[in-house]
Image 1 (cartoon, rainbow, N blue to C red):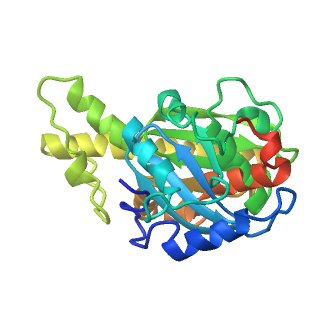
Image 2 (image 1 turned 30 degrees about the horizontal axis):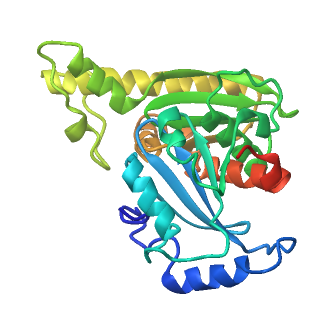
Length: 298
């Protein structure tokens, strides 16, 4: 497996052979010289997938997602220097910045000499608590550097989370509940007769089901979707009571879907929410820019 094989933008792998040779020339310079366009890779390890980004200096080039990887996958990626050309040789290994909520996946990279692990200590938010997910902290910081603060970030992934900060970059707090897909799967797994209807319910551009359903499949879809949307509206309205006109940013694998459903059920609210899929990478870029390689764990 090479990074880029499941690129959802259907583009080429992150670095082509030509770029690999260019990277060799950049890295072959003296150790004290640094270019603002040096390439590096960001890896956000989520509960369900790996989220990758290629940067050239400060500039985000592309993003893509892959399944979790095995030890053999990691070894192949390291040997190819994250390119489509196996054994592409560079004077220095390509920098890899990792933020992970899955410890056993991040441990696979510990032997990579240019691996930099981003932790809560690297995120300049105030009032962080030790068990706060690094993905939530980075996405919140990414929102702050993008649109300012106060700001609320809603992450619609495996878990559905709400995380907010005030104008002083102090963590206000948040909430966690099972994500939309996980609610469908859990209901099926924990009962004897209820089916998993997520595949047909969560198809792109599907309409909301009838609220008062007359069959089991629609009843499951109605119960989950309408309660998730009601909860989302309640949290956003509560946030705006404290911080009127604050931006609310929506990210995660289900963000487009939830925004689509909100547009149908609460259009006045939906129009005020911004979909921002790359917030965690914005946060990683900002942390890297503030502290540099030496300030981040290796």
